[in-house]
Length: 118
Image (cartoon, rainbow, N blue to C red; front, side, top):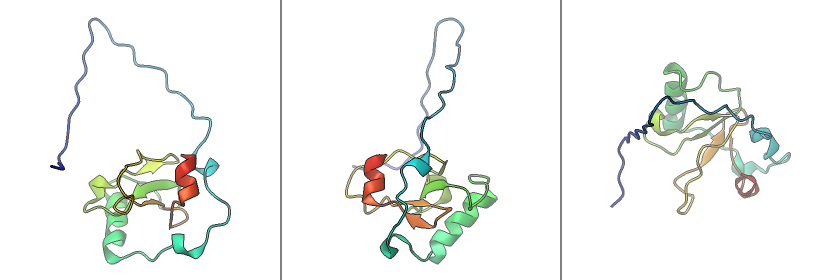
């Protein structure tokens, strides 16, 4: 049965913990985007999707809609959008119809080729 609940993962170490050095990614979301995309990937925002974006902005989840935020707008609450700046959130398996990632700066969905490049 599918579950929708928050989870907490706790890890422990013996002794002192030294966090790993951040790794600079060699490619960002701009490196996977196609230059020319047809109209079907652009869409008009429904009132619910507009409210999700407004909630993300007002709650500090995203800072500016003109930046390259990648987020899932087919969710019930802003907390579930999985917004990431310049990178892709974890892609989910299973039909793809319920998880459509949007690039806020372009206001369009990712194309199948872009999904494959990720």
